[in-house]
View (tube, one colour):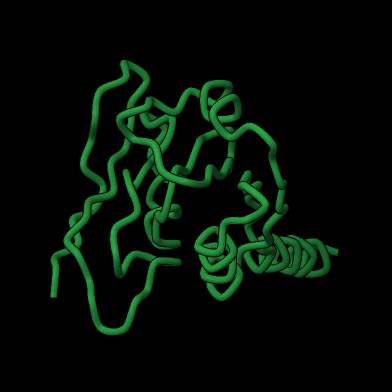
Length: 144
């Protein structure tokens, strides 16, 4: 009986570990880079619920994205915002940081996920935002 229970617990844990992460992405209907970022997330194991919005400014305001961190699309995972071209690896970092309410790549830097353009890569940072609305550096990506 104990072996069966142990096997069941192990199987249940493995099943949960292999479940894809789900993120909601809010975007404008005509944004090509938003679709490319969604593809980046899907290629990295995320399940994406794609929401086409008529008023992205209202979405950002509702989700608490400060204008200084704004980009073109906004995701939501675990109740936290993901603004702009945040790499999948940094979304995983965000999920491990209970002190953060969101993460952002401000603007639209070339070479960030969804903004690939040949070999060009601009320097950019992934900024976390804590509950006191203070910036926390999550990652720093150099230019090439």
